Image (cartoon, rainbow, N blue to C red; front, side, top):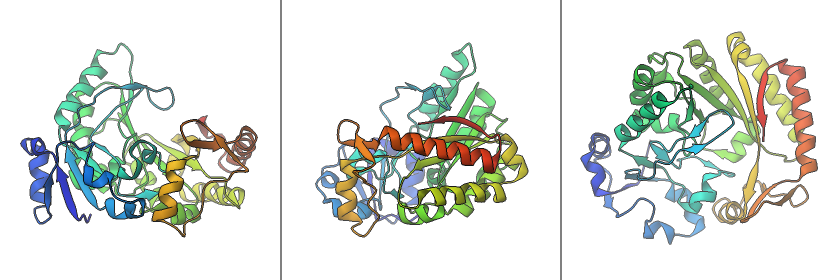
Length: 331
């Protein structure tokens, strides 16, 4: 993966991973910063430079370790080894949190984070599921840090319950032979290829994502799919029918028998509109004032009647095309 520069907290170089990254990217400029959350130079850049900002790598330590209760596919959302991403999905919810500074940040204190996670899992009277990929894409990150190669075997051996993470990337080769003991739930996010090409910039193709799910399933990982986010753009019904038919045709029988679905409707924001209009002036405009309504703090969601129509359509088509696959939720 190519970067232009590394911005780093000097204390990060006292950790094993920090030293590894310094050696790995020795030929790049290393620029010291006080705090990965507040890089003045980045905050002052124009929205039009969004894609250039994504070519910078930020290295620091994670100071916030608060677990957030979740009641969907996991029990807790866990701050883990990265936030942000190098991809440029035009709806990315991380942009709501980080604005144009949604570049990839790597946190090198992984031992501390996993120690805490394993302790939490073992102290619970019931098996818990921990979402470790809600702030980043760990499959993408793993190509730089090998953090999943560190995390999965150690949690399998020492932890209780399960870990889970979603991805839009296909680079799973290094995960296939890991001793996971069925404790890691792999979830692939999918969308129609026409939307991936136009909206999910810098991510893997649908064909490669499906192949990755099949391979992870064959390797014994429990697997699920997120149809996310559902975008109600022109022709959306035909595109999502085509997506479901491709899943039926290309997923292995084993994958289809064990998988579950999560369906998430797109939310959008004033921040997205501002950045996208300047950084990607020729991109598809995802804001539709006829279908969307305010959701507070400059965010938009689909109106109740539009959501209801989409949910009815998707449930019907999933039943018709994929049969009795389990739908965990539609949100």
